[in-house]
Length: 88
Image (cartoon, rainbow, N blue to C red; front, side, top):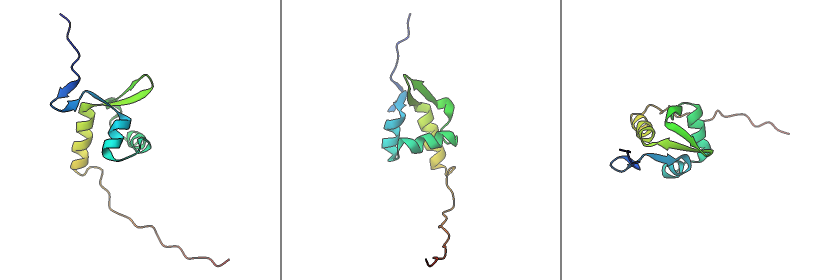
């Protein structure tokens, strides 16, 4: 007996979501998500490449959101240093 593909892993969490759609939901750009992947904030094992387009798994989304909520990615704010204006 063949098992059928279930498009949802758990209640309300899709099995796969495009990184572009996930970026829009977070109000971020796809470049920001690419940078987060490079920094390992998004686990590379949770990202699949299907026909040249990156998709993130539902488990990867939940893992990322759990880590973000726990404050794992938070950093102390820093203001840019003042520089003296040089007269021309």
